[in-house]
Length: 75
Image: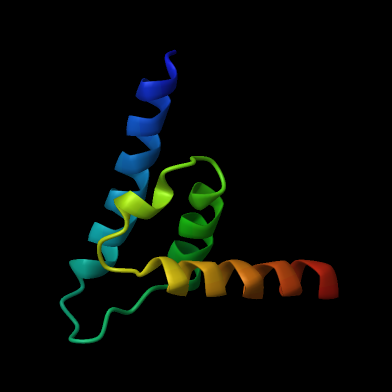
């Protein structure tokens, strides 16, 4: 597989995760812990993950990364 193809798959997964949360139709963008974890894991896989974010800001995702990192090392 080419690098561009892998990047498109990654972008598609990030967008699908955000769309699933958006379809719940709440005024506030509620993310489940699983969706947060999935977005954090996907953000580690591609160099251009910030351009795929629509409903979540990069700062929010980076704060989730830090929280997951702390949880991982405190277990």
